[in-house]
Image 1 (spheres, rainbow, N blue to C red):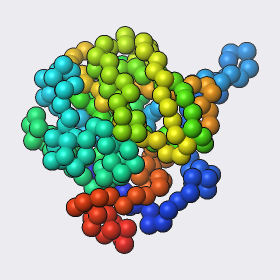
Image 2 (image 1 turned 45 degrees about the vertical axis):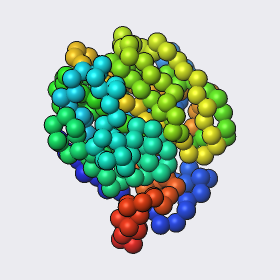
Image 3 (image 1 turned 30 degrees about the vertical axis):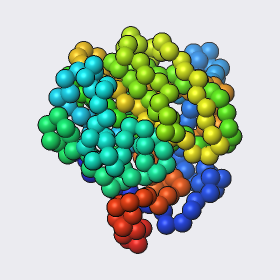
Length: 253
């Protein structure tokens, strides 16, 4: 299944404050009503991601963890690390990744996962339980301040996470359940936009990933938005190199 989604990037710089008021951002905290009628706050799992079509025929998570499919499939135009930056995430708007495993052309689009589904890597792409696949997803996290917080990833099998250009998580051990977290990890967010790239390699059996933050992170704003907008609600950036002309054409249109 190939999804070639090109988002028209805003032509003017959008400031964080008015942008925040105008969008239906994904929440990091939600209200839950108990049987007795009282309401409590609970961490919300991230449901929408800017996702690449699945890389298939990978040979399993042990093999796929060592391969940067984004770099290999775009002649280095983007990498696992670079798409966790504003510039790199923006470049995905008009890049197709050619799979080195079978030559398939892979496109980006907003992908929704069922955070309670133990095969949500497969089902998020409209497929039944797959084996030997790798999932790539990006979110933007807009923070009102510089802060240190904790992210809670769940995954099956090998998960690697990059934040703002740096790897912050590398765990080859599956967590044992779609909402089971074994390694809460401290991260640093900067004021404004932060970009997170979640890669997960799967071999067989359950295939899932999940991510949430802390109750104290209720003021974070997450994109893609609930109405499935991503690049077109974020601050635009002029890309470097050969893509600049393509982006200029998109902006004129």
